[in-house]
Amino acid sequence: MPGKFIFTLFCIAFSMQSFSQQSIDVTEQTIKIKAMKEEEIQLGFAAGDKIVFNFKEVNDKEIKEVEILEYPSSSKYSDFKVSKVENKIVPVLKQGVYIFRFKNSAINGRVCKILIQRIPAAEATRNFSTAVSWVTRQDTTWNIFTKDVVVGYDTTYLQKTKKEIVSSEQKEEIILDKNERVHSETNANGNRTSVFFSLPPNSFTGSTSVKVIAWAYWIGVGNEAAAAWQKCNGRFRSRKSRWYSLSLRSLGNRHNSRTGHTSLRRGCFLFDCR
Image (tube, rainbow, N blue to C red; front, side, top):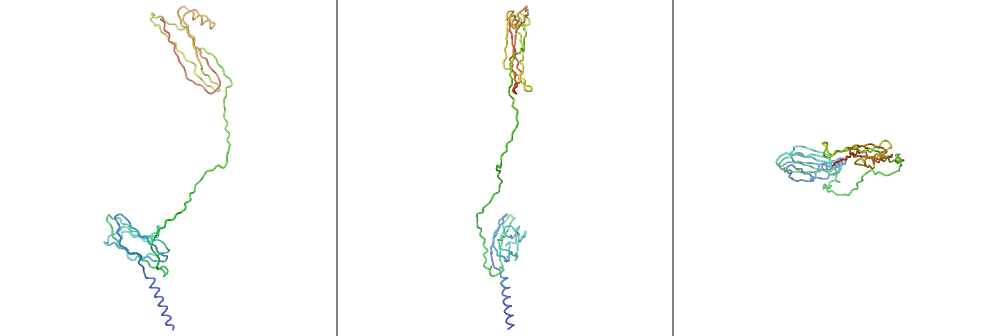
């Protein structure tokens, strides 16, 4: 009776060990990797699986890189300039998608045979589907931004000075009062002469401004005209020859505003005696 019990336990242990070493073919294919290109195979594996990976280039030519990654970017195995990989075991710690990537940097294509197998950890995952299907799902994205809002108002008072006209005065100023001799046509000095004059410039000093708003002139010829002008100004001067009497007057406006122009005005009178 004890010997029969020991034999039964031995058979059960042997059966479990045989199952744990049994591999299941996941994919076996021959692919062509074009020049300067790469190819990928995506497969799903259950937690506890062991991946058995075999690779061979049919002409024993090297390819640049063979890599196995756990999605999205966790590299589990990588080899460079390889032409053959035999029974590479990669353990699967958690259920997920694994990517088998093949890169060819040569100017010619490469033909490769690939065998990928899995050793399940238990009978429950023996029929696990390794096919990968991608499902598009809508997701909500929240954008965080800062918005300025008015939380209160404040009033600021600025002091400004305003100037007003408190007085205005107009006065007349004589800017030119002279006699000018004009010779006859037979005189060697010529029968023309010119009289130049300048009007007072506009000015601004402090709170006072001076501006020329109008100007007038008076010209008289002969002794009679000279006598009239002298009488008008309360003066009398004797003249023994023919004179032109010229008077220029400017009418100024004086006030205390800020506005004023400072342009200089010039003029000329031309006399011709015939």
